[in-house]
Image (cartoon, rainbow over all chains, first blue to last red; front, side):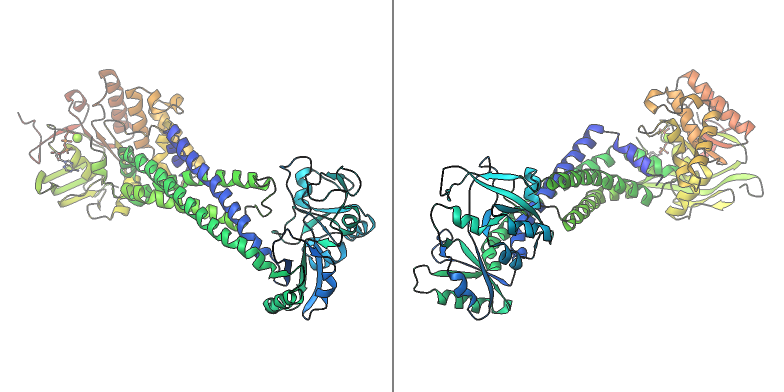
Length: 383
Length: 232
Ligand SMILES: Nc1ncnc2c1ncn2[C@@H]1O[C@H](COP(=O)(O)OP(=O)(O)OP(=O)(O)O)[C@@H](O)[C@H]1O
Ligand SMILES: [Mg+2]
């Protein structure tokens, strides 16, 4: 590419203008990265939900508890493979900003129903042997620098200890990996039996159930069977597919996605004007030089390619730097400090970013390139 | 590149008409010109008489409205834009009144420009550039940018750029028009040497009788025609 040097030299002509243009493109692409990650964070909840799992909660609200005894009754319902429960623990680790989900579960059943949380055999065994044992997701462990063997104190807000006012203490016995890229690894799970024996009140009640079904296409029917089972009892239930549970969230996510797309469109339109203007100016102030190049034997096409190349170089420079920084920052975690577990810059979005940068360069450069192309030597070189 | 009778450039019955809106400007009318190989021809004439226009036709920068232009035995008036561009790059060296160097490139890279259109390797290009710069006596200024050079030096860079592809025909449009006497003389000495030592054919447009005196022949352009005597 012997012409690259020539194009590059032209960029250095008005350094400030080039820097400002590249900078605005750069900022736009950092924004693009963040928006893409944000959209991912909002849409993943749905894709992630298992189709073969139902969520059973109290009919009135998610914060009302259900009897622990429902498990056996659910498992007797036709079409239900297994049922297991969890409870929202709340609590604070060191600082209220250190938010993450913590739930007591029954390890064996829980891990069987959620194969996407991957533990080694040793970790599973250790969890079985340690009453205060907890497993944490990889992202969560990385966030706080936790390792197996660490003891984690959690200040309670809902669930006080039976004896004393102090913090609950959990021993990390395993760090689970996600089977999929979008598996949530920001949560902490600990043993229900420890929870059951140590809490001051609420004995015999749990937060919600997960129900595993064999035939996902019968989800609606089985959900109804479950709710009928507990109809007219003190604790009536509301059962939904895990996907539907996420769906309400998803509808909002759809709106968020549309807003993000609109913002990005506006940003890129502005950037297009900025880059287009820079290139138009570059050609206008260089009319005579372009004429000289043609006089020296450069073809119309050759000269217009130089202009297009310059436009591409500007947008790729700004675009790739911006995407690179976005990628780097996003990989360091989400800006809310853990509330958006699926905040990441997917390869698809990165590729999209590069394509957008290319397109931007081509579109911004087309008109100026055409201007350069149709420049006639005799006219261009007359002063 | 010379045709049988030793003429490098043959312009026959050339008309050039510019259209400006509905108005037609007849600049050249039935013009004939023969430039023999290795001649140093000076073109003079009042401003607006069409000297640059004629030079552009010979150099393949523009096409005649009527008539033929033959250089080195090849008709160039009918070539396509692409072919003409390639032909210019190979056969013509252009020198301009205002040097027309690219301000963003240093002397060596300005001189290199026409070579980008060839198949030469970077190393070969470098060698040609060094040679051309040494011919014009600017070897030690090769890394300087145009704004760091005097007018005379810039014009010598311009001449090096015109020479670097080793063209047979050198077309200079008022090469000393923007220079003081001393720099002027330097440039004219250079053209003179190129003509006599290397046998370059040179067509030079000038307003300066002092410059024209260095040429082997002077022609005057007036009312679209060439004459051997200045029109009073
Ligand atoms: N591209 C063009 N479009 C329209 N008119 C032109 C064009 N080029 C030249 N002309 C006209 O043709 C005439 C001759 O112009 P040209 O530049 O050849 O003159 P010149 O003899 O070189 O003058 P000078 O000594 O001032 O350089 C002028 O009237 C000019 O306005
Ligand atoms: Mg002129």
